[in-house]
Length: 159
Figure 1 (cartoon, rainbow, N blue to C red):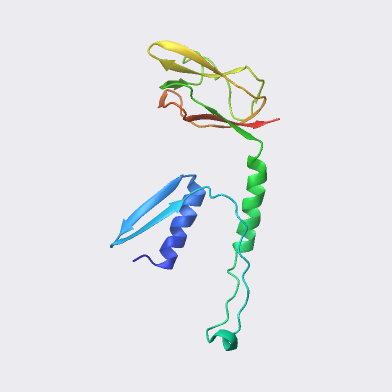
Figure 2 (cartoon, rainbow, N blue to C red; figure 1 turned 180 degrees about the horizontal axis):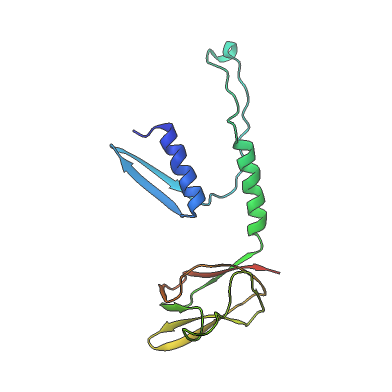
């Protein structure tokens, strides 16, 4: 059985690592933690007196209000994010050749229709273009990494 502290530690690790989800089996117990939770309103913590229920008084959990506020702020930032996904299976290249500068780097402003990378498939070089204008926030795959259909390539903050 998992201890409360172990579960809290797993939640922090998943939240800080950007992993989509983790499932752990340990000593006959299983816990699954999903990363990037959807924002939902936090339930109100109402103190209940020991005399009304016959149990100790409940107290708000420290840090929950701050975590909810941080999640709400992160959601507002994510609203303008646009993801460019791979339209094919192939090999991701950031530049037209090994000696050239990358088509796009984190922090670059790109226009709609601008080439961002190449995905090589069956010896054909397919230029992947931006379908929005904005600033590159993240380049997901490493150079010369194999990518799958639908896999994230770039995250762009659209403007």
